[in-house]
Length: 305
View 1 (cartoon, rainbow, N blue to C red):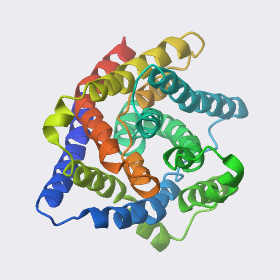
View 2 (view 1 turned 60 degrees about the vertical axis):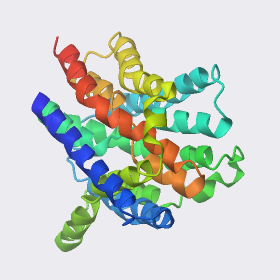
View 3 (view 1 turned 90 degrees about the vertical axis):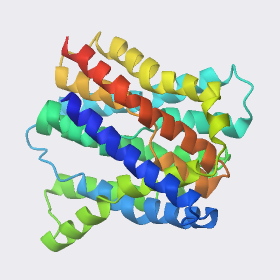
View 4 (view 1 turned 180 degrees about the vertical axis):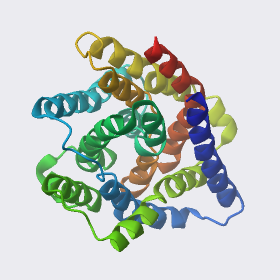
């Protein structure tokens, strides 16, 4: 099980290194990043979201769904509010505070989560992960976009509900409820597209990382504080809170591990599209992806006690 965690993290790092080398070799220029980010958020990620709904829902009752939805809402709101509180004590500029909040709130759920959760908790764990991922995406592509756009006006938030990622989520939920399957050929095509999510998102992140000052990055205290909050404080507090009333070990395990995932690379793409903080965002994604090789096995050990 620990090997699965390490393998998935190392795969992410390989993609990061490829992106980093591409930018340093000028194979990927800054002007390419926005187009690649649009490809990721409008085509590749929606395909991955849609295919993630290929699960069996008949084995669970209404109480199960209500419990998972409520905990998922908590797992989105809690990191958001905690990080917002923490950055209020810092002297970072406003746009960087918002990057900090976004990276704390929206983590790498699917690529690392699916193999780990699937190995530990089988189909039930994967279904819980799909529900949490759906709710997280709902907030990421509505409130998350407003966050990165530095726009607190929610008047036009309805337009973000028509984003490809959310449309894929709504379609996936509808197909799941109706018990309808997409044609086999279309499903295969979507699977292939969706499998590009991790490589493309991490290559974009690695490329942006190639444009920053490495020495300045390594000396930044904010990066290490962020990683402590994202990888240790959040899952630790989630465990302490949920463990008081959640008796189902699968639900508890999935939610705690999801809370301890590194910052999602989609943050980098959204920061690139909607603000000028893509390179800064990539720093949080890179460092948390590296350090989670250490922290995730520790979380798994604690959950096994």
